[in-house]
Each structure stands twice: as C-alpha cells, then as structure tokens.
Length: 389
Image 1 (tube, rainbow, N blue to C red):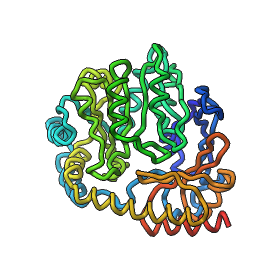
Image 2: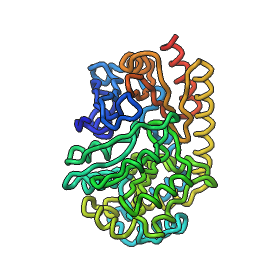
Image 3: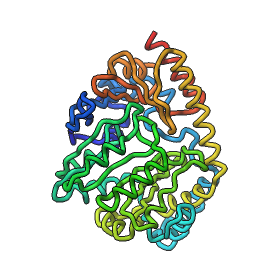
C-alpha cells in the first residue's frame, strides 16, 4: 500500500481543482481466502491540468460526504456569539459538551477526549499502534487514512476480504488474530461502502476480542442511523474493555470546515493518544460553543437525516432503474459499480460541473457519490445519463 498522500492531503493540496492525481489503495487479492494485499487505485482526476479559471463551474459538489444543508441556525448563532470571547482559550467550556456526550453514551466525561474532527484521533492511533511494528487487522474496502499512516510508520496492514454484502467479516477477523496484531480497525458505518454491522454482532465481537487486542471503531457516520437504531457501544467502554470510538461533527452537524470530533475510550488509552495530539486544546472556543449548540439541536439533526434519506432513496432508485446495482447505504454517500474506466467517467462528469469520487477494487471501477440536496442529485442523475448513454 502506498503512503504517498492521504485523501485529506490530496483534497487540501488540490482543492479538487488541480491536475489529477492517482493514489494507491489497498485491497485483498482476488481469492476470497487471501489476506495478502494487492494494488487498487483511488482517483479523483476532476481537472485536466488546466488553470482553475478555465474549468467548469461546480454545480454539484458530491465528492466529500459533506452536509449540503450547512450548520444549524442555533450553531451559527452560538458561533457568532463566541467570537466575542475568541481571545480566550477554551478550557472550562469542554466540560459541558463532554457531559452531554457522556450522558447520551452512558460513559463518564473522563472517557471522552475532544479533538478537531476525528482525523487527529485516527492519526494518533496510527502513530501509537504502529510503534515498534506489528500488524493492524482490518478489511478492504474501507477508510484508510489511519491505515496509510500506520503503514508509513512501520505497521503491517492485513486487510481481509469483506463479505458478499460488502460488510466486515467479523468471524474472519476474529480467527485471524495472532500475537503480532496490535489493533483491530473497523469503520461502522463503513466508508466507502455505506454498509453497517448488526449492533449485537459488533458488541459481541468487542466483548470477545477487546480483552486480547484493542478494537478501534471509526463511527464518523453513526449519526445517520435512526436514533432508536443507533448502537450504544459506550457500554463496552464502561465495562472496562479496550475499545476506542472515534466520532466527528463533520457529517450530520455540518462541521467539516469548523473541525470538531471526539474519542470515547478508557482514560489510560486517552492519555496515551493525547501524547500524539493536542486533544481538547486543539479546538477553538468558537467551534466548541457552536458544537455545544449543535449537539443539543436534535430537530436539526432529524431534519438533516430525513433530507439525506430522501435524496439517497431518490438516487438509489434512479440508478437501479438504469440497471445499476447499488450497494445499500446507511450513510450520506452511495457506492456502485460503473461500466467504464474511472478517469474517463470522472472527467466526463466533471466537464458537466459534477464532482464525484471513484474507486477501482479488484479490477472493478466504482463511483462513490455523496448525497447532496435533491436538486444536486437530480443534476447528478441527469449528468450520469449523459455520460453512460
């Protein structure tokens, strides 16, 4: 697996408006029983090595899994008010948000560490668990920023094949744990497949595996679960198990640019990870106050969840009506196989002002499209029809 640029590095460097880049990805070999890694590519060649002012205007920004509805009115009001204390460090204010989260998740505030998004937590875990080598066990296809970083710093990545339904094969992962495994990495809901693991199965897995090896669960898209169905894995942390949950406000809260996230774990593990990041104090007081308001604004979250589900359902039906097999998604993006080369597909979509992502997995090209507004998804479907004929 290449350790050139992570996706966020690439997004920051190019703004999606520079010449195309190709990044290596990891994937299992074709054989279902294989645990060796082969090369697969992730490309986002939206541009044509031309100056930004010569490129088509982006009409549908569907490449970064952002919330197209923005932040809530309550968060915006809190953000503006907090500007008056922007000259102060955020110290005492962390307690309020930690207590809100702790109450919801059934943990203690000491089980929570804030961060600017969840990226810092992923990178801290990568640095720590890659130290002195060893193996990180996961599945492919999945979100690989942590994995790329860990490999860069000396870890071996063992990515097992997913099930036929594009979910983590928990039984296979459990059977593959050896003394050199330093951490198990799971993304749930998974990116880029959009699939979820049954809560009972994941909890049982944690209870069996975490006493032997730490289990890191990236829950960036957990807020797209219906509240009644949302897994509450905080209880395995309360029970003393070595499970790390990473969360972000970047998705349903719309804080991708404001940067706010948190980890839930044992206090000693948080102390360990804090050695690799500034943790709480990397968050600005303006972002923190907006986050407190947004976290309590359940009506806005419900609205965003409902609008996302409506646009996702529309897009899924439109694609299936065109004869495409869509992987069922529980998130704010959709992954489906396409019938043309990724670069050609991207360029033709971008020429219409439609930004998407693609993957190539075991030789099969895929499109991953973020769920935007209904208008944006209509633009996507119209542009897709023009490209595929």
